Length: 154
Image 1 (tube, rainbow, N blue to C red):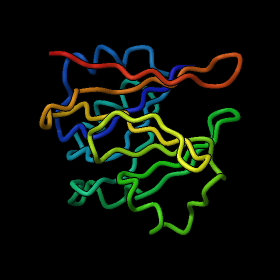
Image 2 (image 1 turned 45 degrees about the vertical axis):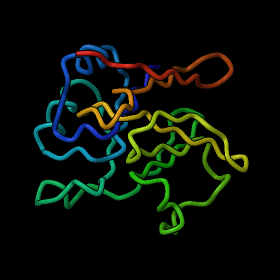
Image 3 (image 1 turned 90 degrees about the horizontal axis):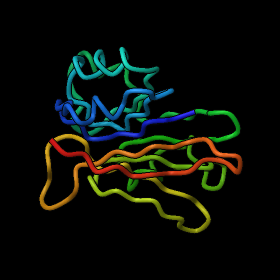
Image 4 (image 1 turned 90 degrees about the vertical axis):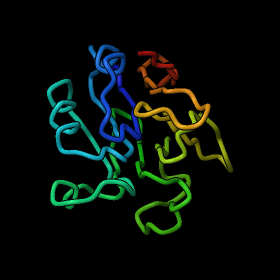
């Protein structure tokens, strides 16, 4: 099982991203999608799970949840756009989830804080400052899931 984790496309689907997404079992998008066209394109590649970011506005974005809880096999995931807002959501309980996936900062992150693992795939949309353009893969292994960040180039 290969799970693509992306965020902050900001209405830009780079050819390198679309190429990288081939073979994905599912796509998790941590917000700042910015258009229904991006959603439609990604849905054609693999099952898509998304949360609304601070730049997702308009009729197309109203039905997108701010948070999402899902289980992938034995892996429990909590998704939101901005990790700094975790305390705003009553459906988040630290330690209840194997992974918390967020975007917003555009910085690739894989860290454990107070026993909670946080993942940010970075931004795969327009480059921001000197940050890399990136996404991440979660791959099922015998011992669980392995995370690998991928820098994208166009």
